[in-house]
Length: 157
Image 1 (cartoon, rainbow, N blue to C red):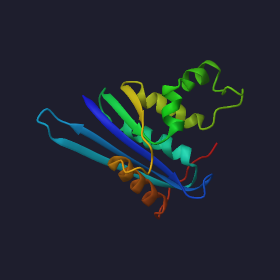
Image 2 (spheres, helix red, strand yellow):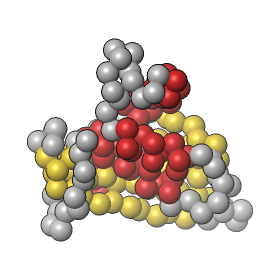
Image 3 (cartoon, helix red, strand yellow):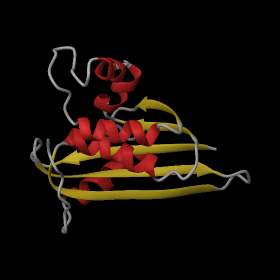
Image 4 (cartoon, rainbow, N blue to C red):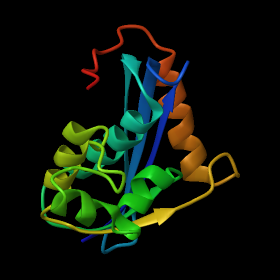
């Protein structure tokens, strides 16, 4: 089964202001019918990068069986971690980056790795705020969530 996951994260007063994520899952069934789901949530105190990771995590965790996934994001932080193989280096170096400093957001990186484990995931970067319809939709979900009421707690490291 092939699924496309579009993601975006937002934070107001980044770093460490209110933020949110938006995720759109799309699947075309055997009859050619498009199925979509949207996910979003807002947090009291977070960062843009944490919300970018949460958007991807929520999308992958929503899948109930192994899938071939194209994950589309405007976050170079997220996409490059996999496409530029940073993640392999971090794992090899016990979650230290090339400057020998601890990688930020380890809790979410670990959760993301667990969420993607059963899937074949390809990460695709798109330029943000450039008219890509699903990216714009995710941005709207993320910013609306960040500006909402009843925000969740995010345990910043």
